[in-house]
Length: 570
Image (tube, rainbow, N blue to C red; front, side, top):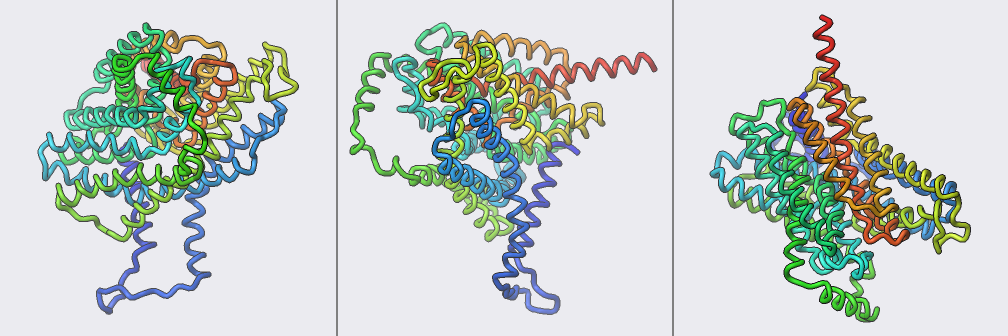
């Protein structure tokens, strides 16, 4: 089964179930108008229980093992108590419930918009209008990504003296940052759609996107004041490929390709995730260069001092309560919904198959995002930051621990790196999207690339990436000196790999950066950075993105080598 068919079939089945659950059918021989079905409370609960249980269980599997791992590691290995354990637990429960509600709303409410618009848009609008709508949609889906709030939330932990431009972008220009990242996603969606329609190879597009990315990285790295932006910029590539962007943009692109008669290729559905990972990096680096030309370091530090001297009485009550997260959730989803409605009802003059089900889904999306945002602040962000700040106690003296360093330096550093490796490996295997990708790849390669091979190579790559990212913070080495050689190696491996394995490898990084992993790793990196007095704690996600690409490309080349040997033997 193709990746696109898998997504479409799951979608149809899911929406059919949702429709049947929510829409009573007329009885035979009666009026076409459906009769009201009377259901008592006990019967309603028995019907809703399995429906709710399955959706909540998916998020429990993703959140609980990671939280338990962090709690046990801190208690047993680092011998540190869990601060505000009850608040963190409630926050994690909010994450589970919020994500369950949000993902259900995404499937029932937002995805039907993508399917209908993707099928109808090419028939009623020119390709130019189609591409403009997709570009605007890129900004909307970026705002709606659950993990994007994590970037904006961690700005306050940056010291303006050490990283002035990073502080400026995350605190004073956070909205501009999201818009620029969204513009990168929009451009990626446009190029991905054209690729679907024209049947372009992914390899030249990778070279085309990587060339300016590496050149801009070298330019920013050459400026000591801008160098601290690199971790944020490269991490943004991982943040954007989440549960909203990938399925919604894919459904539009595949629908447009199918309408143009080009949707039957086995490669349909691959490539957009890759572009959506690279173009946001270019966008953030461009923003950083612009900011450096428009404001000086001294002005940023002076402005930051004024903000930090603001008394607590002048801080709005909205920033001290969950209301800020709720407002953020509404602002994230509502504009996207309005834009999709405008395109569907005004531009295309089409209708939804079931307004009741869609309204139900859209309501769930907004409610789920609000609940998740609360959990992000008080659960994932808190536990990740606490884990990062306590990690250095294993190998160095830190104020939060009376017995630090707990181990000698070599053993302590080994424990920290091993902790990061296991965290990456376990979190990746828990991602439902990786399991779906593994099944699809096994079908596409006729069993040559088995599902287990893909899953373990991706999980191993992410594990090495996160361990390398933690090492970058602990040992304070330059991110560019590691990332650029790794991407050059990826280009070389891409050149020698077949198109099939290139598509899978470069998209595999996107499925590993889910709404749970991203904020957790970001918070851990920033907490660790503050504890070891690093300039900034970004860069772990960027390492966790390139390493699985290398792992899958190497595995693909190994499989190609095996197949050639078998042909020679035969």
